Length: 278
Length: 294
Image 1 (spheres, chains in turn brown, cyan):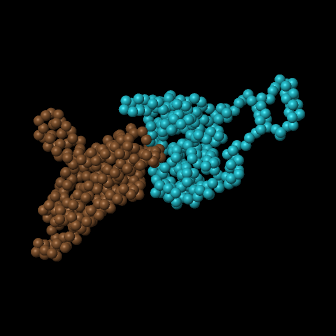
Image 2 (cartoon, helix red, strand yellow; image 1 turned 90 degrees about the horizontal axis):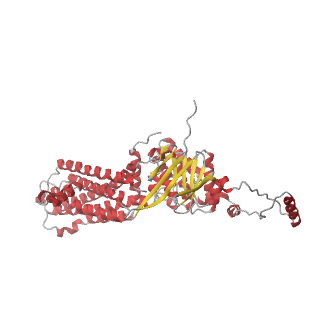
Image 3 (cartoon, helix red, strand yellow; image 1 turned 90 degrees about the vertical axis):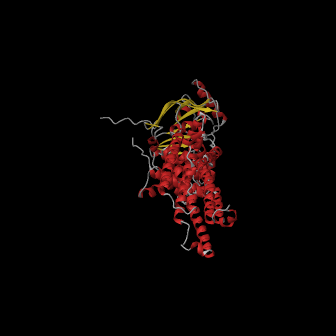
């Protein structure tokens, strides 16, 4: 009997097909266009800056749009692209070939993170263009304030965009884990948004874990803090907007942290999918 | 030294499959103690009414479902292993494929999934696309294909890696008589190439015409299995087809038989099969059907 090894080539084929499928979905076009329009129009919302410096406000606004629409896109794309394979029975044809369930799950995951990578790259590039344009106007208006040149560190925008993308990749892995055992797409989407909220509020669980007097609260806080990643760690926009340099050591640590959660959620998704009845 | 015995193409031994239904996990038995042995080179029909367990059996054979108890092997390899699927081509019922791909891209995608590559890939894809008669339509998107063309491109993707076993789940469902005849012709060609074919179908006349053996399932249980000729033929009866006899000669024949202790049980007018008349009158045959689709 000839062994069939795990094949990265098959994973990439499935991922590529997932991206092509996504490119046809109108919902994803809509989310992308809405996010692009919001970032492009950021300078018309400057009056709502709540006292923050103007360029920092624009940066926060842009990354806020990326986080919000990125999360919606990630959950919708992961659930939709997984369940379309199951409901249309293309998964049946695919898995009847010599394909490992892990290759299928990993292919779906990589396809989805490729879509969110494109999304984050586009929005980061557009945000950089908006910031550059506004800073140029401000330099003309207030030359004294910019006597030493531009104040915004554009190269560091990429690091913030990268961490945003990494956060979406973790969210995608968790959504895929839910999809691997869920019976409906709606359940997966709702559970995905619940995961998003829990991960954003995970720091509260950490605080509870540290301070709780009752054993039950202490245990629950500890469990939530362990099972769900803290999405606040992925936010570098504050440092960037304040004119500080990107702390690359922190970026490396957060990357390792994200990869750990992706590996754990992905591994569980593969285990669960192997038991699934297609 | 004698050659190793060739393992059966498919062997199921005491397969049971239960599904848990609802929150309380009430068990529904979809397949009940099924044992089958399908030898290589046969066209084997798996028949039964809806809900009889045919699709579940196929999924167990493909390793997509694990049996609750019992074993299943393909050419001696346990069906749950990925390696077992190297030698299997599968055409699902009412196939849905990635609609954004052209027919050629679709077959190429599945060929690469099966590990084909290099210079041989394009040639093999072209070969199977031509074999199912879709060369002219190969560069059209699958989304524009008719039902019959979808079945044929489905067959092409099932065959692209040259499997020894081909599983066809309702290959003629929803296809017009010309398409069904074309599919039957392709299945017979596959057998001539030495492949084993397992098919399910509700077109019993077609199954009778092309299958070597059949198994009939009902509520998950095997109720009948055997060679088609043995199942449908009656060894103790003969039919003699004559030119129409005048009443006097018929009476003479009866008297002649009666003198030998024999009787005529029934006298019937032979009937043409409606599908044959349809195919003859439409006059183009299966090949012409392909051209029309293309």
